[in-house]
Image 1 (cartoon, protein in one colour):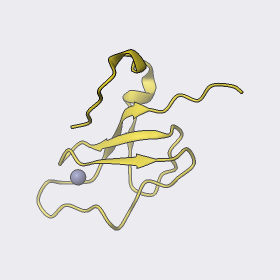
Image 2: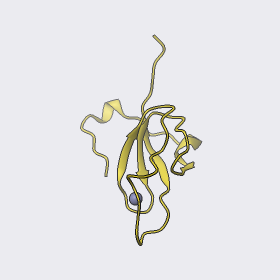
Image 3: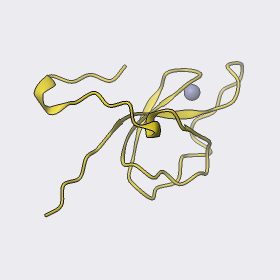
Length: 77
Ligand SMILES: [Zn+2]
């Protein structure tokens, strides 16, 4: 489970990006932490990075499906 210390740097949001399911090989639209819906493992993806295909597999838990847990907010410079 993802952890944080300073709540004032995190804000709750109900944007649809958190509901989308990501399959291995798809290209992440948001940089952030993704959670496997089957086993709970978490990983970090950069925007434009492919969801990993080979290093995360299940033998009995079913298909690997990732869901965005926290996305990294970028501010215009
Ligand atoms: Zn998993």
